[in-house]
Image (cartoon, rainbow, N blue to C red):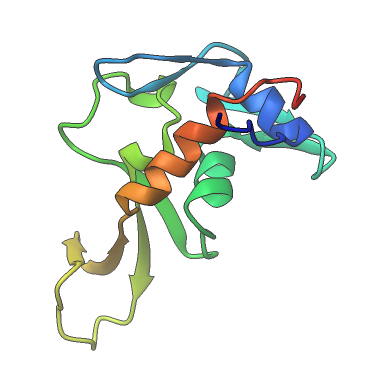
Length: 136
């Protein structure tokens, strides 16, 4: 029998505000929005955070100061309501003097580095969301 992972207070708060679409795997936000973006209270931070940024940093990895999350084309049609971190690509500004390499994309006049999640990282986050929300 699989033992459920214990969730932090922030994971519980986050997962209790989602409705997961089994067809698209979108995590539709069902709670507070600020400036059109999903937000919630993060106990460990002692304040509000944007839901998709928190989810990305929690399950995928850090977002550098110059980084921003961009919705992946063709993944979902929910727009800002979707907070599934694997429906987003992290792009960071890198020096334009570097030659384009695999995984880099040009956006306007800037060159950005795209970062992708592995299938195992996606599954780990989904497993964490399916655990008992009380952590018992």
